[in-house]
Image (cartoon, rainbow, N blue to C red; front, side, top):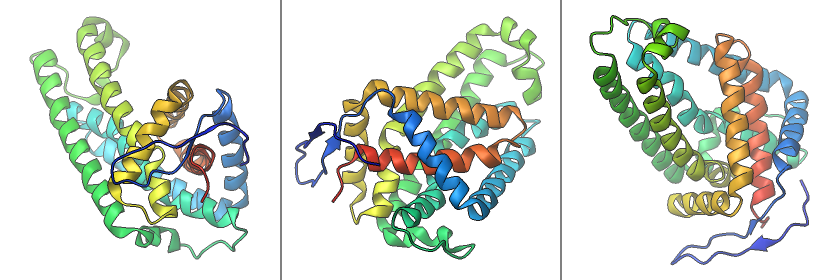
Length: 263
């Protein structure tokens, strides 16, 4: 995806941070368009993995239906780990960009071998964040909803429950939004970058954070689009996720290619 926007070359101690582009506010729409094209071109694999991840999300959430704090942590945590799952779509978009043939069915799952140490550290970081969020969720539910009689996930987000426990809803959303934005800022560029280039974990995270800071209004819009579409998928009991997840995964590859100067 070509662009003639300004390129900034940040300085970071002992890090070879690539140039970062400052992009226009409407670029997320172009990323979505390019992602849709990739999904259509690679539809057998894209839809297969989209369905697999949709079933994974459905199973995780419904298995914890009787444990509201755990179910809510898994729903919001799905947003946290989604960038890691989306590596299969980065792999496909990368191959399409270079006009290579599509790989075999399970080959995208092995894309982590391009940079195993950095991707391994990122996985550990995401797992730590998810475990921490589950504990925070348990504390918030225990503090605000203890003795309320709420015992199922469907009870928590009913209109009546939200009206009765608005303090809980606002606090929970505030904590979740802060953590989600933090993870988004360090992962939106870093994961595709670690797959595409042989960069270390710290350099990838710093690059992603600087790209987010430089393009903060654009990236805030991009985060809102991602969150909104993921919520649409969840609202359909993960049925629409089978289409939405690969679409966003492919689009995120184009976001990376647009934001980071090419080698």
